[in-house]
Picture 1: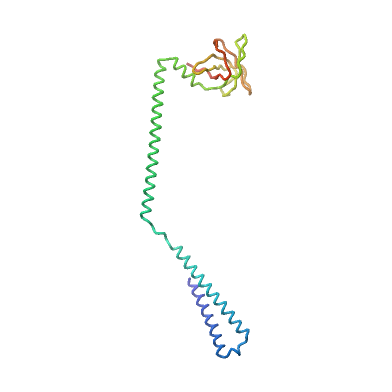
Picture 2: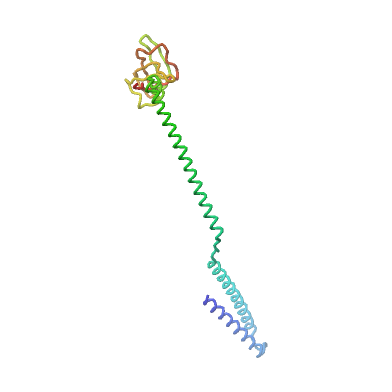
Length: 219
């Protein structure tokens, strides 16, 4: 800011000097002053005036910039208190939601455990109920595509759904709802599917398209 004051002072001094020279020339007689000298002085006066205006504008711009950087937003205690209250309410709602979710989860787990215990108690006195549950819970490893009957008992072709559970020589069973129709032995496994031969004691009900195949549970 001091530098600008010095420049402004120098400009004013030059302007005054130019006016003094011009006034002196008028006193001694304008007729004795060459026209080019008068034109030069007029041009210099215009340039100095323009420079003075530019320096004033620059000083005003610097003052505005200094005021804007020094201005600090006033704190509003009421607004700050409201923000804190909103944040506290938000935390309270989140805690309530978390507690509610945990309570619902704990209740469901408790109900599941109670249902499982009741199921186990029933199964302990009813072997058929236990057998039905184990059949129902067994993994689905394939579905029957076709049944071919022959004098030796027949065989099925089926789609493999769990390849790691279907191997040549493995025993599988056909599941209908919670019962087993009979058992088969896998004789061949390919990328397109597998073949299984019907084992003795299969029963009178024949395999059908879409029947579920499982590994026989160990009762």
